[in-house]
Image 1 (tube, rainbow, N blue to C red):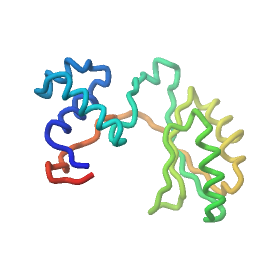
Image 2 (cartoon, one colour; image 1 turned 90 degrees about the horizontal axis):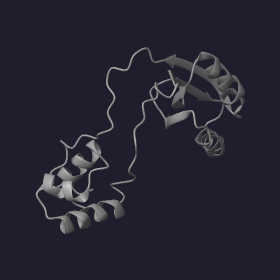
Image 3 (cartoon, rainbow, N blue to C red; image 1 turned 135 degrees about the vertical axis):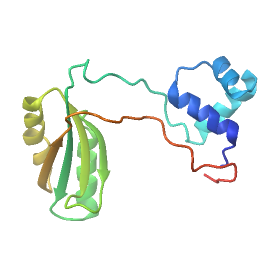
Image 4 (cartoon, rainbow, N blue to C red; image 1 turned 45 degrees about the vertical axis):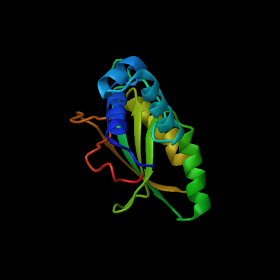
Length: 162
């Protein structure tokens, strides 16, 4: 799929505000409402737009602690990794989970919890009990310097195939 300049402008506007009305969006990108709506639908159907979300303030909800957790596995087998991934996908505290390279860990998790006491229960009661987990290293966020939800578009040109 090729994205033209109008598609990119739609995506950028929707990243800033997913609640923007079609009428407002059409005005921002310079289209009439019907073609704008068709383009948004096409972007959704292609999977480029995966979801429309509401971002919440975690601190105001009492979720004061963000942990970055490196997980090492005892064996590097597909079944071991699949079981681990299925288990952590069920934990609402886990905001992100990635297989990583270049470290002594196999996974990097981002977890959000209320406090250190809760984290200890999460770590000892859930993470370390997953079969195959052989090592855990935790780092805690002191202060968030940059947080973005908008993806960059500088690399996409009218000739880029996605």
